[in-house]
Image (cartoon, rainbow, N blue to C red):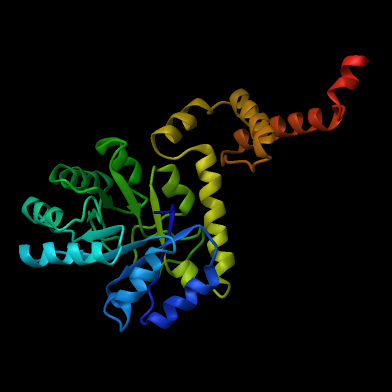
Length: 290
């Protein structure tokens, strides 16, 4: 599955394909939720999208054992890579769901607490830890709690974060725990689920490209445990300047910092490296001969 998962929160298969047409060629995967999963032709759509970036089937399964096992098995047969289990599942239900897997697919993602509810990071992380002990492959939580979940559950648990909104987005869509793509990545999210900011945009492709660019910028600084280390290492002016030089020489990256004095130091380092490179002779042999 790719880093960015686009939530196809539309009612019909035809509208889902319209979104796919707009985003064709971008490095994205797809989420199919309850609304679309019960639409006419949904099974074929899931199978086809599985070959076009991968599918997360968001059904939040929470049922009797026979139904849980059969549901997971069917999801695997359709080619879904991820399937979600409801927030209230217990260890017995997870074990039954595992019996429905075909090999190790689909991976089981336990929903911690819906992003439409209020919750504390510690509470979400505790639920994530409990789900991990039950045997899920990953958890679904908001990016607000991703860092706390990672710190408690370690590097191997897959973390999938919905509720991703651009900075400045007016939250009026039922979501309460939201954050930007950058914040989620720096919090160690493995995958970001983005729906409305892309699907309802007038220019869907441009909106998706902006999210992808934000992910790349955040990943350059470093997500998760590595990112936490990087942020601790580069927290003074001198080191921020050195990081600026490194960014220029790597790929002329934009400044990843937000604190004013670090931004200024970063830019100074970036400019030093740029000036040195532009002043250098194109042929290294020229300098040696001089």
